[in-house]
Amino acid sequence: MTHRTDTPSQSGIARKMLTSNKRQWTENVTGRVIATVCAALLIIVVLSITYFIASKGLSTFFVNGISITEFLSQVKWDPEGEPAVYGVFPFILGSFLVTTLAALIAAPLGIGAAIFMIELYPNFGKKVLKPVIELLVGIPSVVYGYVGLTLLVPFIREQFDVLGFSLLAGGLVLALMILPTITSVAADAISAVPQDLRNASLALGATRWQTIWNVVLHSSLPGCLTAIVLGMARAFGEALAVQMVIGNTTKLPGSLLDPISTLTSGITLNMGNTIQGTPYNNALWSMALLLLLMSFVFIMILRIIGRKGRVNK
Amino acid sequence: MKKLSKMFMALTVVGALLAGCGSNAATPSQPQQQSGGTQTPAPESNSGNAGAETTSNEPITAVGSTAMQPLVEQVAKDFMAKNPGLQIQVQGGGSGTGLSQVSSGAATIGNSDIFAEEKKDIPASELVDHKVAVVGMAAVVNPQIGIDNLSKQQLIDIFSGKITNWKEVGGPDTKVTLVNRPKSSGTRATFSKFALDGTEEAEGITEDSSGTVRKIIAETPGAIGYLALSYINDSVKALKLDGVEANGENIATNQYPVWAYQHMYTKGEPTGSAKAFLEYIVTDEVQKAAVKDLGFLPITEMKVDRAADGTIKQK
Image 1 (tube, rainbow over the protein chains, first blue to last red):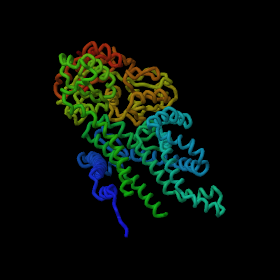
Image 2 (tube, chains in turn cyan, green):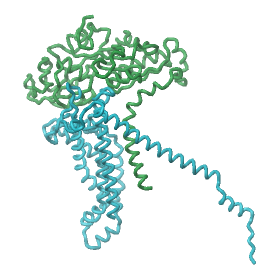
Image 3 (tube, chains in turn yellow, purple):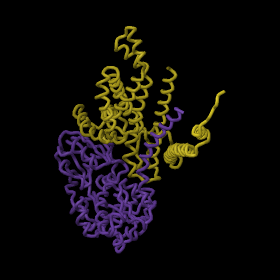
Image 4 (cartoon, rainbow over the protein chains, first blue to last red):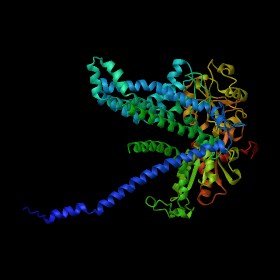
């Protein structure tokens, strides 16, 4: 015969565990409410900003009666002229050209640096290169712009006997700015490649370089693409540094060494001087809407790349 | 869940970026929401009550032209020292922002380089103009070009892109590089109206800030642009126009025509502290000191009067 005798304290604990604790319950509810409010606030902010920019940006076409196709395709930008002409094609082209150029320069450099950091000299990479790159991220864009204006523009002027303010200068400054983003994201992607893959490749007799090129880079490709797109998104939206070195001429560029304008520089140069509600001001909002749409596109590209990467694995 | 959190992250990034852009436009309206009575910053100034003797303590916000900002800030500082407890907020944002803020009632005073009549869609009749100073502007070149005078026709030909090399006007064999302001800029409007007779400028490098324009002209061989007299220093060369130098004397008589009023607009006649502040700016105490020190010309010394349409009358 066995006797089960519960001591009073034991039964007390059991009761405590079974009955709902009021304090824990309040904590749970409060936590959930705070988190939900944060999320709701965020969604409201994003939606209302999108709505605000869209309503301002679209009124160019629906209130001021400017045709969308003309707005997007015309080469002449003369909002103060008689009649006023709102052609933002030079701005759009400028934004795309300068972003593409920056990505073309920064992508190989960034991925190369990431390979160096992870595959070749991990110790040196972790101790020296990584902090240096993190430092680069922290430099404000106006400093990049000022350095570009003071060093890069005169350099280009003397080397090529041109103005100096150019697509090339903008591309180089932006490349420097997005290099840290590309390097650190690509480095994460490369270090996420399983060591087994490398070992297997080496065991098959591949050289180190063959392993890096065929195995490591191949399997980290989605990550590297993500790095490049993130860099491009940053470059596309950058205003200040670019504005200081590209010359802001609203003309189609004939070469890499010609001055150009971008959507962002067009907005920053004119926003303060125009009157709210005028077609000129609304046209600037339409340019902002274009930037917003482009950033949505970049985010969508990132998500598509992410999904493909997962499927491949 | 992971997907959801990823989406939130993306939204946060976009939201943060946009919020940054929007804040600029939103700030000027803030002081309006505060009521006049609670404005006195009690902890710092225990003499807050004394100010009530000279003026009421309604806070003033002066928004607009960045070119006028140093002047208005300086005068506001002096005026607040004289009237403890009074709050004057001075903000930039550009002439257009100043005019639209004052006409919508979001700012007490709208600072502008140009007449309200010159901007479309501003109800100029509702606004009261207070001209507080004059600023002269000059065509400015890189010093290496070595010329110090241009005729108006030469200037027009250069800025409209007909003359593309300095040797055509007696300078060295150097290409002309135009440094412009944005199309919406008040400085550009003034220069184009009075120096170029309204001729449309050819496309050139465009910068908004006077400091950047000066730096570019100083460093680029063959560069020409225009600056307010207060921004001209030894790194660039100011040109005479038809042999007339841009200085206070020639501007006061309109011998040198490229100048603009610095306007402070109010919606309707100003009252209370705003009225006192605007009266203070045109006293000799301010005009002979702060106005001159900051490179502007005293409004009190002008011998002519210019209307919004540009007609000149002797005073």
